[in-house]
Image (cartoon, rainbow, N blue to C red; front, side):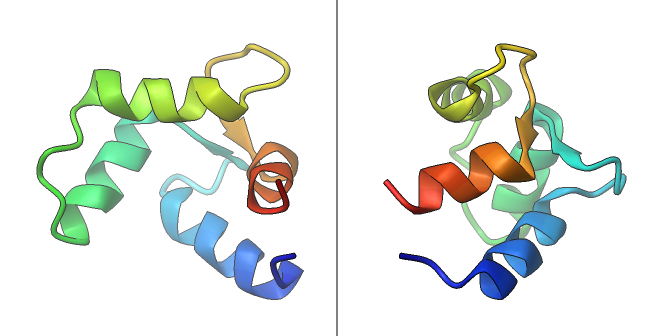
Length: 70
């Protein structure tokens, strides 16, 4: 099980516009900043879709947290 405070900090790193959601564009940008230039927007969207339980195309903290605890 992940530590919720560490998870919150990680989530906030990806939530660039601080709206409480991670979009594919945000995920792609942070992955590039971390050195992974192979993550395209469609790949980022696929990662989000894999945990997007409400099917809004975005990753909320609750979805992020649930994915950390699978």
